[in-house]
Image (cartoon, rainbow over all chains, first blue to last red):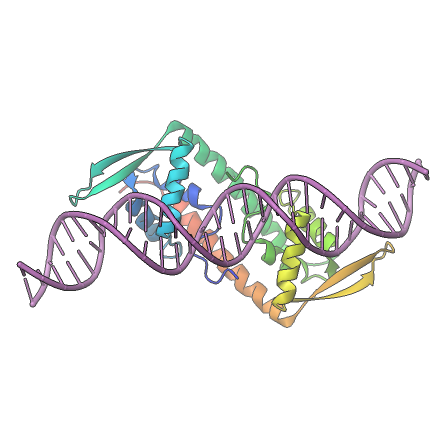
Length: 112
Length: 112
DNA sequence: GTCTATACATAGATAACCTATATATCGGCT
DNA sequence: AGCCGATATATAGGTTATCTATGTATAGAC
């Protein structure tokens, strides 16, 4: 189980929101950006990416607009909303709390 | 979505295996131990715990034995197998790699 | 005798993610 | 002109993990 997973489940929305804090970006670009920044450790599959973007749209954490890329292709550009920025803060802080907690369990140097 | 989740999905098996490196323990005790070590951040629900233990048994990463607790109750004690110890190492290393990768994405100090 | 904490277990729902597939077009190469 | 790889979006269907809710049972405290 969990053989070389592409992502840590539950972190995709956070990663997308974070990526959009730099600049509006289209879906394909978001996936590339995450892959590049993570040094190829994290891969966002298309079947995960687009449903995730729909979720974020529904929550009003991002908004979308069709535009042309600088390589002359039509693409849907996503922009972080104010609510999305706030949400990102919440997700990051919850994530960090979880990671710290997991760290405490993992580092538990035995002894009763 | 992800409203105060009890756990980071995908990390439960790892947490259980780690808990068992100290000593054999019964399910209820494992859940308590994780809660305590994590300082109440991580809560293992029973509906997650027992299915997880079944998975680990099937994979032969733990073995189980009915015994009496020191409080005179019948309980199923789980012991880490050699394969389970190996598996824990893999899970921890993959987890740490993921966390490091997510950290790189989250800490990305903007600039194109 | 009742209540709380301990202890195990499963059914069913929900949600996230992946695989596979489909469509379409730009630009480079031949 | 035709082909191909990279870019770009989208959805259907399956798998799996986790949570909620429920059920059983008993030890010990009051």
